[in-house]
Length: 124
Image 1 (cartoon, rainbow, N blue to C red):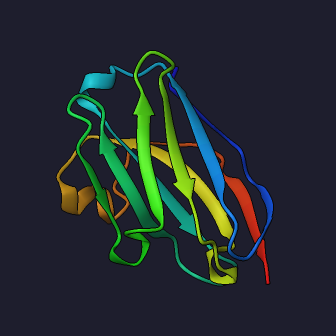
Image 2 (image 1 turned 45 degrees about the vertical axis):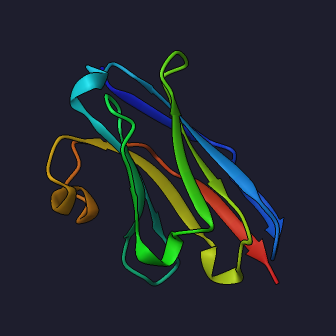
């Protein structure tokens, strides 16, 4: 049974930093790309960042580059999203997902498994 469990969400002031974690289990990790998506109130879900488990290759949405960093700890089977210089518009539910596909498919949210999400609220 595949499980993706996010943690680390909460309230942070604008300009601050926060690190989200996604503990994964039940996957044949080498096949998968792990990614973060977010959905703000009243908006569609959007791609944030992704990392291939086997090679550790990363890619980001253009608007996230430079502020967000995705990484993984293979031993802990955990993916992280380090967020800095947070803005009020970063307020959203951040979800971890796992998928097997092209970069395009991943960024479009064509994922096999999803976590329940963690709420990040940035106060201005």
